[in-house]
View 1: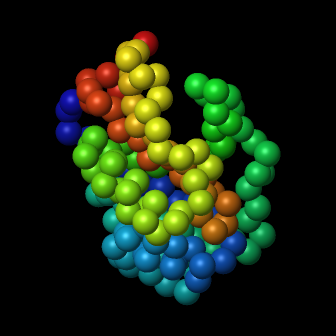
View 2 (view 1 turned 90 degrees about the vertical axis):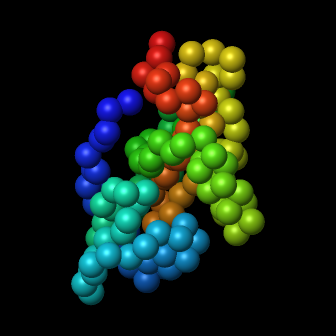
Length: 141
């Protein structure tokens, strides 16, 4: 796979203090620049920013059926290396994160076989982290 440029993603949070604790302490992301209404993070090498919007309320009932699971939409995350995914999942399980979809292997034995997990931040933003056993199959049909 060719080297990728880092992406920039900014998301609204309805409580900056709770979100900051979640992303810094629970997920272990390193803080970058910040101000009274936003904080940026090193999100596995990408620039991720939380912006306070006290009125932010995602739709908790929005989902799409994938592999027999109700996948929350919208969602965001990063495709991790296989071992990194499993280490990160273990860390989250040890911190008793409440998963929307527990870590599991999706499309097992088929093209695009992947490990995946879903959870939400304190503002209800859905995150998915995944990994492909064979990164060359990221777009396999």
